[in-house]
Each structure stands twice: as structure tokens, then as C-alpha cells.
Image (cartoon, rainbow, N blue to C red; front, side, top):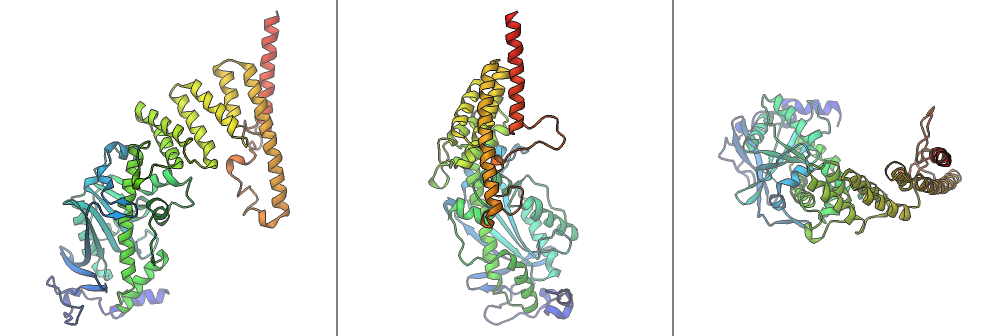
Length: 472
């Protein structure tokens, strides 16, 4: 839409509705009956989907509301899953929050006129879901025209008055800042609430195993839900602009359903994440235990942000169990690394060494485990000969990796179909690329061949000095 068209729509003649709808003559035709509240007419985008007027201190706003029983199944999970999650789960997912009152939380999702958070972007559909009176209530507030935004924001502020927490998906960087901007533009201030942005724990849980952590991807991979005939996100703003110009609300029906499904998916995902964080070893959300990749993610979360010895022990158990489940091969190295690091942190150095030996036997593509074992025998076990032996094995692995890396590079150079997107090794896992030290570095990186040779020579000198001192 051109700038000329946008400006034309802001003129009173553009939509024929720039005057408040409360002054409009009620339509007596079918589907256009007048409402008692201010004379505003309902809007029916599709059969069975009616937006009804609701009075606010700033005017009338259209809304639709649905109530779901607590055991309503969305995908594979019930909507009330978050209510049965113990508080420790939210503390693990939100390290900076001590408590998260999910029973008084609101789930918020927006449909907007663009992706900018500037003053020119409007939220024309605001979905608010919450648990109330034993059911999940989903209310959607609709902006019919620009001048009705004060009423929409007043309705939203009323929804948030009794809330004690906020749940969004990517809302920390987009939805909530945009709402705060729109509220300020209308001389309102939204409450400051503990905020659970599901995108961040979702990335911790599934980024390594899934190609995308978008809400639609998580719906399919985690909830087992596939949306049929869903409206593409890039089409949503234009549908609202078309409604402003033509008054035809039928194309907006799919947008309202899209927003509704987003809210329901957020509630179901919150329950899945909460169960996974609370009892990862025994949790079976949706009737299946956590996968190895999910256990790896939870184990990392617990060990890296451990608030207690219990968190650290449970995180270590998760990492150990992940190796026993269907953990994809590319993730096994990271699991071994995280497990060895956590065991050292817990003061269990001997167990960490045993894990490193298992990793050295199973991972023939990287010398990292051999180098860590060389460090262990040099600095903790004080066995320089064993440290040298592990360093020699590391050198053998590094040389083999360098040779294979050179062969792959030659293939990419001669075969266009095997060439990566750039010349820096894209397409080859980062852990499998030859490492190199920074320019001008006096000491090579430890995982590079030169770094390993440096370590071997240093150990040989120390062994020579020990033999010389023992012979005198």
C-alpha cells in the first residue's frame, strides 16, 4: 500500500466511519442489529464468530470471548497444565524471578499493523487468555478504526488490573514494548508484572534439536498440532487495512482464529516447559518422556543456573540420562562436555575423568576430551606421563581431523553442489572445523595441531627435568 493510500484512509471520507461508531445509525438488517451499549453494532466476520460491543470509560470496543474447560486438549496437552506445575519450575526457567503466580497470569498476543515498535504501529487485535473460575477464558479486543484505540487500551488495562504475571511469546522484545508505547500515547500506564517470555526457555530446550523455534514450529514438533489453512503472518496487516477501506470483515475471521490459536498454544507450551523443568527425569507431558535433546537442555539449564545442590545434582542426572536416550550424534559431544564440567563443579573430578574417557572413546572427530584428560592428569593427578600420553592421542585425532578437513575443502572447491554458502566453513559443524589462533598470538589454541604440539613439548621438558632431578 502506497503512502498516498495510507494518508487517504486517515481522512474522514476514507472509511466512512471516522466519526465514533456510537453516533452511527443502527443497522436493522440481519447480522447488523444494534447493540444496547451506545448504539454500536456487532461485527460478524464469519458464521459463529461475532464481535460484540463492550463499554469502557473511553468508549465502546468490540470483543469476542470463549471459555474452555480446564481439560481441553490442544494438540497433545491440556490447557490447565501450567496450573499443576510446582513453583520451582518457574524459578528454573526464570532465574531472576523467585515466584511466578501462574494461576493469576495473563497470556497476551497481538496482531499488529507492522513489525516496528514505533508510534505508527497499532495493535488492532489483542488476545488475552487467563484461568478464571475453573476455566480458561480467552478474550480478544478488536480495533475497528484508529480513533477507537483509547477504548481498546482501556479494556486492556482493565484486564491487567487483577493480573499478577504476564506470559508472552517473543513479547519481551515486541508485544509488551509496543503495548506500553500505545498505552503512553493514550495517557495510560500498564502495570509492571513478572514476565515469562516463552521464546527464551523454548530456545534453551529446542534450539539445538529443531531448525526453528517459532511458535508454529513448536506447535508441530512439541504439541503435535498442525494448523490447516492458517493465514500467513505477512498477510495479516494488509487484511486489516483492507477492512478499513472496504468494511468487509470476512478476511479478518482467519486472523482472529490465528490469534486465538496462538494464545492456546502458549498455554499448552507453558505447561510442557513447566513439567520438563520441574521433574525432567520422570516428566511425560503429552504422554511421552522427554527426549535426550530435551534432557540435555534441561540439564544444562540446571547446572549452569544452579541455585542449590539439589539443582546441580538433578542437572547432572539429566545429562547422564540424556546420553542413554535417543540423543542425536551431533549433540553427544556437547552433552559430554556439559556433564564433565558439572561434575568438576560438584567436586567429583574422578567421575568427570571417567566421563572424559568415555567421550574420548566415542568421539573420534575432536581432540577436546583428550586435551581435558591431559589437563586432569597434569594438574590434578600429577601424572605427567599420562598427561603426555593423552596429549599424543589428541595430536593423532587432530591430525586426522586436519586431513579430513582438507579433503572436504578440496571437494567444496571443485564441486559447486558441495560448496557452502560462504568460504568460512558454513555447512561444517563448528566443533568439526579446524581451529586457528588469532593473528599475532604467541601461544596457539589448544585444540589446534600447533597447540597440542606446544603442550607435548612442554610436558616433555617437565618430564626431562623430573628425570634429571631424580637421577642426582
